[in-house]
Length: 292
Image (cartoon, rainbow, N blue to C red):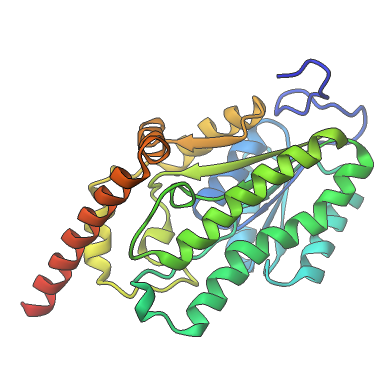
């Protein structure tokens, strides 16, 4: 780390007044919930932002019951005005905004030829526009205060080809690219940017999630992901936050998934052949189930 950069880690605030503050979108479940709970342990005040308002309140209540500081905020990340209000309210309460975790996301599985226009719209609106809305809401405040950390949740699907998850892969590649560009531009303002690229984490999104859709057999999807040894979200959050503290740009967990990223960078052709093989195995299994 450049010693001239301002510190903004999870243990020591770089501002003398007010509790550190984090807005976590998609905070009611999965990775978002795990991040919110892990952040609260470090003394950060949490805004659990989610369109599942009742579930978000349950998460915030649980954090408060364990001695942390948290409140829920109903938020649909597709709504820029709503996003700005959530961020501005958090800033007004704390006098600062230390972290924005742009974590909300959905998945529509299936081959691209099976997609309807609404499938593309839904995934792009949440996974990509939701992130840009967060940046539009939080980045100017962070520039003004001279510090802050924006953490965008992408996926390993943002670093490699993921057949049968085309729209998800497209948006997550875009989130990785956006994060890398913003990281360069934001450095001069004292603002940090990281992108999370989880492998398979045991979250509701593996089953489609509350707002996603599976165009493949759910049992087949579950079996496929189980072979990839899903990581517990609480463990993922702890490891990811340590990497955020170190100001890592691209954060990959579990660590063994980095091998796939290295392979994709060293030999895209070989990586695509392996992805194609996995895709055809999945197609054969789908055909077997349909014929049984």
